[in-house]
Image (cartoon, rainbow, N blue to C red):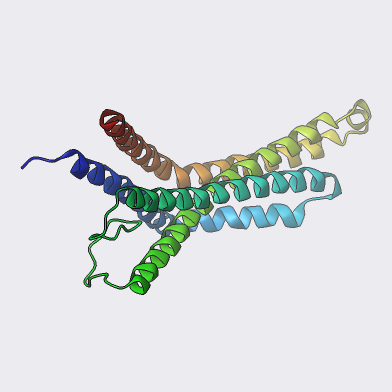
Length: 230
């Protein structure tokens, strides 16, 4: 059996989409098996927000603002990627002047024939909504990692500020010992929090690295095919 250039193009396109959906499915499975770690992480974040004082509020609010900006940016990028992928697929179908086959956003075999325009539009809308939901979910999971890492960085910055505020007067009054005990406990909590993040996302990062590498290889192969055709 020999594959033509068009068959290889379709194969690489489908393989890239399959790897992306497989990565999302694996992430959800890993989150399910590590739900206890996720619960501990969320509980620690909630506790940090409940027990913070006035001096810590500025740092934590600034970190939360940065996390929100990053989250909005990442989710928007994922949603735009779905829109551009769908637009590219439909434009490629329009430029090929095909009249017998209706191009879909995702290559799939349906148990019915798409003969009417209304059914075709319904399938396209369903695929677009499905892809947008999946891409947004991937973006949310990535935003979760960024938010947790930034929260840990904010807690480290707070400990640094507390250490820098220790003055000679505190040392002379003998209150340094109680302050240091509080900072040591907080530092240990940060270490425990970081280990929970590592335990939750280490396997996910490995799977995502392998999947992204394969997707990049597939996209590079598609670029080579398109360049050869031109």
